[in-house]
Image 1 (spheres, rainbow, N blue to C red):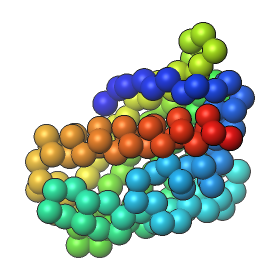
Image 2 (cartoon, helix red, strand yellow):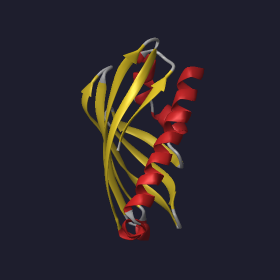
Image 3 (cartoon, rainbow, N blue to C red):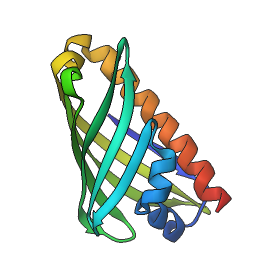
Image 4 (tube, helix red, strand yellow):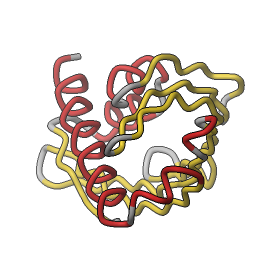
Length: 145
């Protein structure tokens, strides 16, 4: 899944927010906790509902390929118990467009367990919906600060 979102803020402000666990926690749908364990690692707990399956995922998030304040890769993996597992990542790149920053992202993911039985279309539509919710909230939080 590839997409881009315009954020009404400077590059430095957007970059800082993309690396701030407090901002990310506010913006990630269903995020119950997000804590930095090192400058490039975080642990998270997220509650997600995909179709009829609702699960709490606990996992690890890692930032790599850091090129501040231009781009990075974020990868994560988590387990949702009987619901299954999720692994994925996104290449994040910032690009100036006028006075705003556009956040470009390419996402890849793998799922297993009950989640994998739901079908690709439902998983894809849920992923797009969650990404949309994240960037809507992210834009609001960043522009308000």
